[in-house]
Length: 147
Image (cartoon, rainbow, N blue to C red; front, side):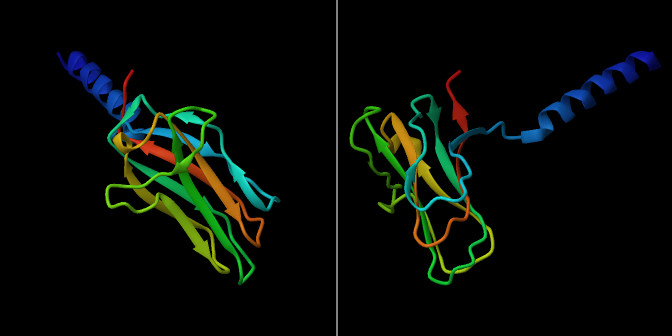
């Protein structure tokens, strides 16, 4: 009997450890890969978000900037087609889904929320480096995915 209890406990602990990596089972989608050494406007790949549901968080990580006049902006844009005109996404309050970091600053991670039901089928991240060439990465963290 003790062996059965020990075996059952081991199975329960193994399952708990396996799913403890993300207790909420969120879906992470990289929209813009960390980039160094470029300036101006750049865009990430077009991503189909029609299979993701719920209120997503868009996480934007900027690397360290040294220039006082530096301005970095990451904006989420959406469109009904892959090759159409992408427009700035807005959340339920009508606020643009974007993150802007101004001035010389340490590395930062910022998030902005948006209901995925408000977006068209395709999204992409557009990043503008004004005066600095520090890196940037953008992720979408969605609570549900139709699988």
